[in-house]
Length: 210
Image (cartoon, rainbow, N blue to C red):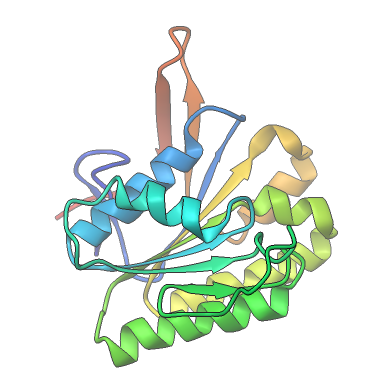
């Protein structure tokens, strides 16, 4: 089981679960997702981030600020830096690069390599995987293409018995797009803000931890 106390105390999900984290801009979706990653990392689980919005350096910095141990297993698939023209980029133990958020084949290959390395080589049974963000990919590709990509992505998470999290800006897409994509996920975390600007979280599909 993957505990999700950082989302809702006393909840968890089964291995292979894919969770959609949705809400308007600037409501804390990214923060919630990174907190879920850090919760697992502090428990010795692996953390993999596919980033279509920020480079690996920023992701690793924000993630590092949240974890309390130094020996974390983290990998980032950076889909941004090459597109921005950063030169002399080579894959290493913590970062693999895709040419852009549209390079879905390379994203999938890099993800699979991290999963295999963490699970088979390092012997980490539980891994949490974050895709931030689905909305960025939808800016570059049509819904059908993104649906197929996410169908493969979520299937890979399920077969690896990992936990998948996918952030999307609910206000950037029409109802048909949101309803189509929601078919791919086992649970939904809705993030918003109240009248005082505080983050609020509603969940569907999470279970009480045993």
